[in-house]
Length: 129
Image 1 (cartoon, one colour):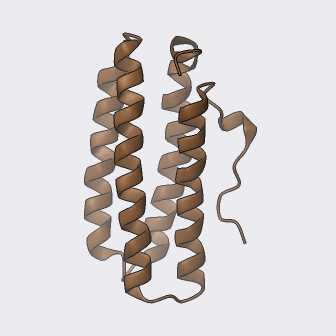
Image 2 (image 1 turned 120 degrees about the vertical axis):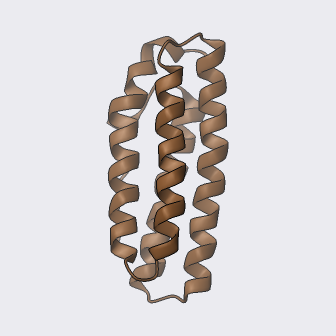
């Protein structure tokens, strides 16, 4: 069962960022599958680590593109990305007690971030990939 279905309307119009967003959703879906299957903590933590590392890589790429384009909302994006990192670190400490809370946070944060915050740079970054 898929936890988050990727939709075309999530596209920000920058192929590399769209591919990264879709991969992030895929990692969250893998995490969901592991939790549903009752996989051990080690396997779940591995997926969480993968998600964190990939999100960091994505944020750096996205921020670099915004910087190159002189996108005026870059600072707000950096603040949002840093808040996400801090929240994920916090949730990672309680993940085993509340795995569904972590999943809900990830789903809500990424879908809201992509469809609201990231859509704001769609015109500014179009064709910058």
